[in-house]
Image 1 (cartoon, helix red, strand yellow):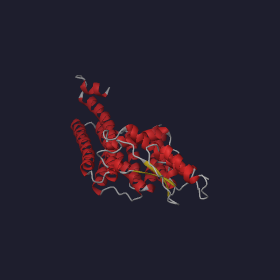
Image 2: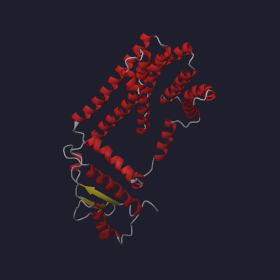
Image 3: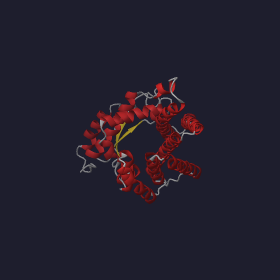
Length: 334
């Protein structure tokens, strides 16, 4: 529908700009996701293949290019709204810009929580967003749009929370909540209520991260479903590329990680699986073949005499040979 409006010869300029802004919002959110994926891939590749600097830098460059291209289109739409002198479309253009830019900062805030580091919005970005927010709110006073004003107050509260000012976010949300609820703006009311009650996504993500602190990764890995394994495998293939990575080889590797985690949880915490790391550390051949594996006991230093690609068989033979009568067998799940 948006494309049809943009291409319709009889649609006036204002209608076309309205459609363009809807499209711009969707594209902006998609660009944010793509940027996050590109940067995440670059970071993971830097761990897997630290010598593959060219690919790492290309991923980062692609992410920055996508961000720049969206910003350029957003500025063009904003200029068009100014040219039309249309206060409602101008507020809409500013709001779209704010929502997408905050989405980008939101991802960085969650990443900081994961890494357990402080996050501070760079001063130029903070000043720019604050100025845009102020301009949009001033225009709302002129055009009288209550919904637009309350949506901007929601954005203001979210921006404060991203910066770590939880109390400021709750204060702004509290002021806007009653009016949004009275006007039955459901999505705005829901977000404001979550901020007030400490149930926002940032708050829940922080609590989830704290709860996971100290949790044995084997327990989480052992409980992974087939769907989770498949999703993780697809992500690894996207990062490494195919070729060299073969989807079935990657999926087999993910299953072997779950299997050994289950063995440590249910059989003995000391059992390990060792493999030839060359096939996972070389970007030219990574995950193109299944490596030989051996089992190992990190308490008594026992090790399989013969390696095999059959991880189930390797573990079974090792347990029969070394673990059956071992007095130190100590599963994590007790």
